[in-house]
Image (cartoon, rainbow over the protein chains, first blue to last red):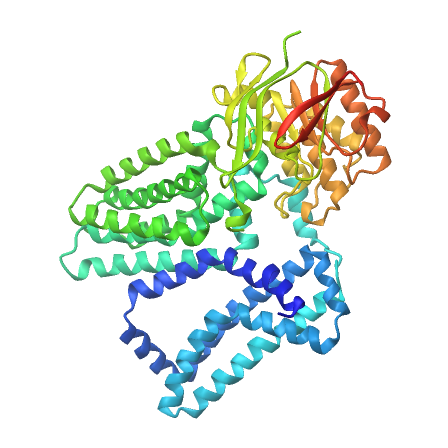
Length: 368
Length: 216
């Protein structure tokens, strides 16, 4: 294989999919759990007959493309040896970058191909042209951004006056390091996870009064909230071990460390608490609503120390999340009290944390 | 003289492959220089002693603080300066130093003094993503000297540093030693030329650690 393509595949394409395995699995999980294949076909069929809806699809593909291209540009900035690509003849360079870009866009191209096939079958010319044109633009236009990065290595990074003032006056407490990391490096994952779980809980709160549902409906919402946050929990694990390894050298008691993680995860799912409180069904007591949120929090905290037992790449962590969901689904359906489930989760989390915290080690060969 | 650090039956493997096996080693108080080829296991040994990596065996500080049984007391007394420091790029050097200083119970006067000695005040409140490797190294070294440690592990402390900073590190080690701080240094550079009173030289090779000489 062309050595340039090999280097780009290993440094950009494989690294991208390793880093975003959690995000992609969350998307697959959401899509697979809520909709059957007939509903996917119905939705796509509606989109090819509605330019507005199709533009919404293309907008989402564009967001993904920006996310992927931003990653590629970041790799070029972080690995200066890759700037040697600039010495390749323009045709070879652009061809290699295009192949890399297409490789990064495989998930949306697969879905766009599915919509395109429906469009061709339905002879909807406008939709067909829009899909083909958008794919052409999404695979070629970002190359200008990448090419600009190659031509302007190490740009001056000027901070805004406001940011400088904030940095001079305030110091980020440790408890906010990870949330800043998510906002800075994984905004798409954060947006998707928070958007998905908040909409889910809001929908369940609205659904609740329409039939003879009980608190188990909201508990199932909490269970899915915990599951959707699996990729975020993995990010916390990865962030601590790869970017703050010094954390384990600090003289901090295990109990305090556990409390800090509990606080960080509580902050992360605070929006869900507001959603639950704001949309809580009239006949559900406040304590029950709170128990639902506490259960979601305990699930996040319970998943986290599982990662310390032995290193798992994201794709091997998601089956753990899946089986936890299956197990808790039955426990909820058997009417076990939500507070009890949450307490059991907290106890398991604390036990695993104390037993395995110092056992955790990142294995770069198994995932990035 | 009782050892400052005792390592017993230490074994470390990655994916079933043994990378380090140290049956029994005692480090006397003083400055120790660990040599070894790239990939020989020096950094792994340092990370184990710093409490960053899981391991089999026993690591004992001052004959009383076991890394497993006294995780807080041990870590309060053992500091670590990484060979190639890597931090979240959005944090500032100031935020990192304050975070570590607070955990290591370092007084504000010590922070200010170290910042002055390494001459990093000008860029300390900008994100570390904008730092050169030398600037990152200085931040890492400042954090390694914070608090009141008994043992400081410095992995390749001189790489990427300018001449002034190199002298600062040598001065800090010298002063620290006079105050009873002990050092494990790993470097490809010859410390015997720096005038530091190196107690002994050790070789990390063939997955183990052996003494090369006493008092160079």
